[in-house]
Image (tube, rainbow, N blue to C red; front, side, top):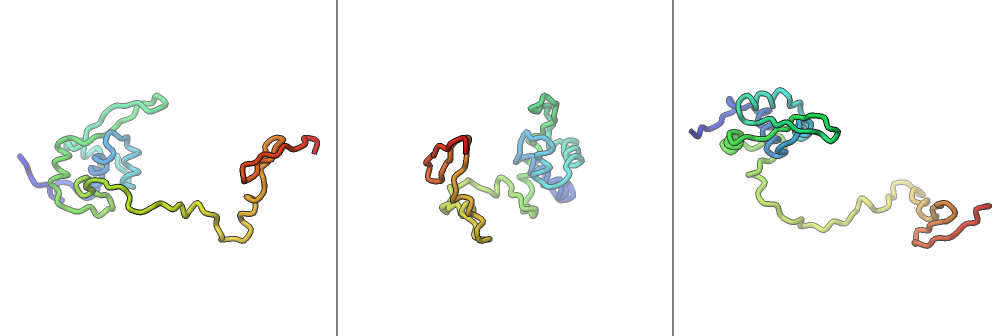
Length: 148
């Protein structure tokens, strides 16, 4: 009983939430909401009532109960049957394909000293005082007389 899903069966927001549940499997409501960038309580209830997602009881770090959501086989079939490209920036698992190692070398440009304002990095020329010693940039440590 393989039926094609249409936009009338699942609207765009429901598909978006269903993809997020598939991507963040066994996640609480807050994680799904941050993934989609929208309020997801009502869409999750609709998807649960239609049998596309399942609720699981869980416990947070502080011992508080939490509901976790996972996709059902019916939900996976629905995502596979949808032949539309996601327009909300999220890619389905089929569209992503296998991951590949990065092709560019990371150069750490954002960690270099800024030249936005002259003198803004002058403090790094001087040693830091920790207790009775001065810790210099080159790694040397100089003891200081505590009476000074």
